[in-house]
Amino acid sequence: MWIPLGNYEFGVSYENHTSHPAPGHIILYPGGISETEFLIAYGGVDFSSKMGQLAGNHFITITSNLDQPAELGKMTLWQGAQRIKFEVA
Image 1: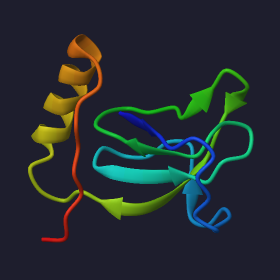
Image 2 (image 1 turned 180 degrees about the horizontal axis):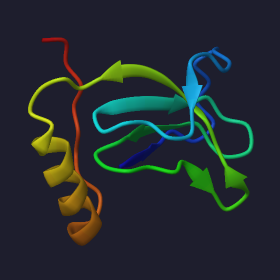
Image 3 (image 1 turned 60 degrees about the vertical axis):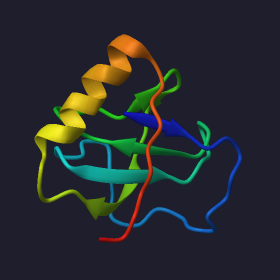
Image 4 (image 1 turned 120 degrees about the horizontal axis):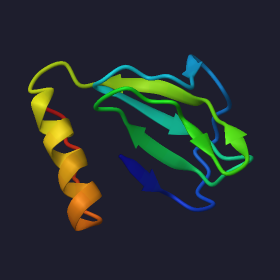
């Protein structure tokens, strides 16, 4: 799943970056070739844009209920954008 953030700048560069996050990984693309964005992996991923392969910073891992991101991803694919909220547990 992809969360576009436009030109928002987090003030970070590349660190621990990957183009192939594992299921449950959340990565931040800090901008550059494409806009700033979050990517939530729930299956096999090749993180790319129209300009080619991108790499983002892996900074959070979902470690439980990994079926839920996959369900949300399928819902997003078939029903369009969904609301999401990040909270500290």
